[in-house]
Image (cartoon, rainbow, N blue to C red; front, side, top):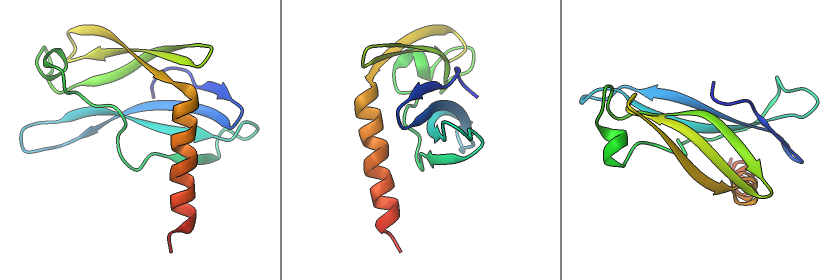
Length: 116
């Protein structure tokens, strides 16, 4: 689990981190989910791919390399500020647009509905 979900008109927006094992060691990355507002145990959407992963030098090397994990976020109007840990050595911030994230989810849901 990551930071507490953000309530949006489309549902509870949730970030989580996961680990993928590779031959060069594990990679910690971030995924996205949308939960129903009234029944949050009902997952409306879950990203098939990770949406945020280590790429900067301070995320790739540290006490534990190739790690990003969400710790907290703040919503200011449409801007999300995500606070995250990097390589178990740094605390960082990234920004994004809530409306763009929700539009991405809408486009992904449209693709999922039209596939056989």
